[in-house]
View 1: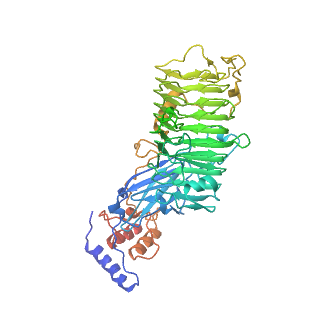
View 2: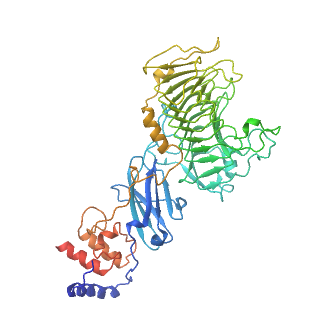
View 3: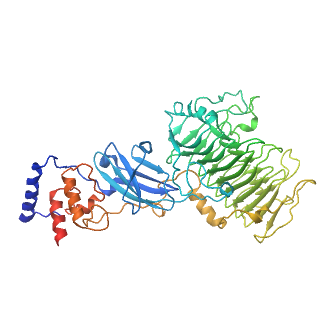
Length: 548
């Protein structure tokens, strides 16, 4: 819609005649349409956006603000990679505006975040695990360390250099390690050369507290290596992808004097490992697919949630020996997808397993051995061999016990004559005896659990398929966390304060005059000519609109 009346041209000429008298030359840069944002969305306490580099240009900066907040916060430069930004540390269940600005133009989009589910033993009578507050924001006293493949061996902290050495001996406290992109095996690990049965390509996070290790975006890959926490408190691992590890993927341990506790491992994708030296005389034959994907011993108050385990062989061992202590462990909303065994396999522990999805598990589902007690609640088992495997496994002297409530068995059935019982009412307190005389019976610990909400197995299955594993983007516009940028109404509200008044006219005029630090929050509201550019003709029309 172009308007070229003599009156309008005269008005524009009058305004143009003023410009040469000013010290600042007029800015003639084309504004960029909102559709320069090709994709944006919210995920768990973070947001992301992608844009057309031809429209935005180079030297890109990104800032964000909660809805209704006029103060924008700049995203760290490390979070901007090419034509994408990922911003962790946002409040959950909150609307945000993202502002992308570059050498050729700018654009905005609106997103809504989700909140992580903090249900489970890790948060029982405990808050703010890792480097983040429970509302999703970063703690005020946290050090953020960005780790890339290029800098992983030269980063420094507390007098130590390199990721391996920092984890091993710097005793990280109140630190957020943000992993970016694909990370090869860090320098310092025991080489995976077939000469060691344990520890190949492993990092050890030792004596640490209030630490988060997280992947940024949807492409953080830890290939061929893993991490074990030792004697750690309040630590969190999230949004990582691991595979081909020759030993463990993520593990935790302590000792008889110092346990690892309040550990939260969630929203990771873990595929099976690989060790080409398995069975060579040094490396155990059963490590061909790596060792454990999520093992734990000498640990308590642990939550394993919203992880996807893909094709893993020995998925999650709880208690490596009968003389090790570990207790109060929650598994919920995990997808044991084609995993063979140890989903988990438990010794000497109380485990609450609820709202998990088990698919095509070749050996067994949940195994309770050596005096363990497992409460299996509203899990969905499909094509799982021996879903409730309460038995004295291997050389264990005693079996464990399983109490099952609300579980769904789809194309599978529990074995007979094992130490489990399926109850009809949530408050039932059955007597479930150990299979072996002298072993411990089920103690109905589930009657006094933490606060939690349980879904139906079918609803949990749907949510797990959608949200388990590392970050997923572009999952569809029907998802409530994604808001596609709408065409902006050309109503003159340039500063996006909800009101069209003289302030909008003054702001547009300052922008046209290239007054420093002048930004248009909503440039298209001033494009009255509808030609995808702003000039003095738009200024004339917006002034006319004001006086109408």
